[in-house]
Length: 328
Image (cartoon, rainbow, N blue to C red; front, side, top):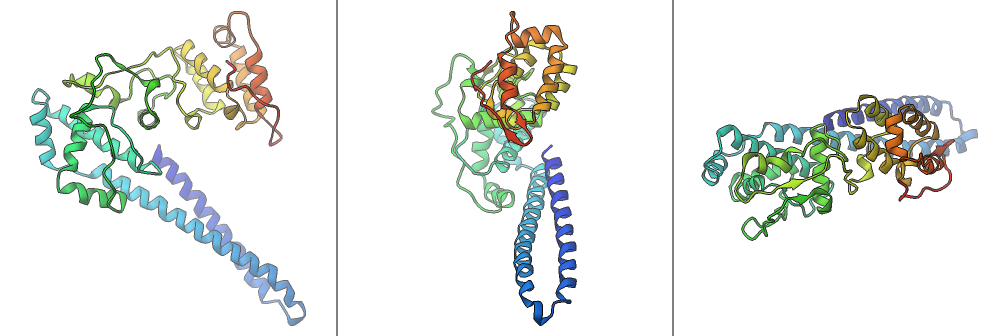
């Protein structure tokens, strides 16, 4: 999915660059026709050329960043972690099979993919004892410094994470919605990577369930209710009305879809991003499904949600009205 985004971005930048070069060619032809009598007509053209030059630089810089990112992701996908790391994991977890050790290493690779796609190397945590142990021991190997330079382009300070030795282990599973922001971002990244709904997934993303799956001693355990929406997920990960309509058509769990619709259409920041006709078409599909409409509007058919959502949607590129973010 991330490769697809990079591909689309590069296509648009290349199209923009071609169009700018085409207009530049037309301007140069016009410059040949300028005489001393209309020399002042040259100034707007020069200003336009300067602005065009700046835009070209920005486009080229964006293309370089895209291809650099692709190169880094390709390096990460093909990187062979040191054999010493495998030996450390086998010593720490002697009951695991080779394919299970490889699963831990694979999640460590995906975790570095998460760090690579973050804008800043902020404080973050690893929601798995096994993956955290692999990360900590990889940091102690000589290959770690070379790996960082090739992946991030430079050496970076060690990413702060929980202390595996002094961690206060919980006797009960941890609730996802009560985790910190970095853990929620990690949840969204892995959910997107594994084609899960970050709001109402039907299972935990792999890195959140690996300790339970492999029965890691003192491992982390997480719990979530598939019928309960996770409200701390940022709206930037929310599906569009078009995707929501597809989910309604293909839905297997009415309550899960209804909870997400209530949450998203009751949020002003979500509704204002879409035109009113998009929101109206979504409500039309909801209204045509009796079971879903009852789950969304409630037993007595409360229509406040529809009013708030339509009032917040775009009308002729302008945002009208206001929407109560607490409406549900």
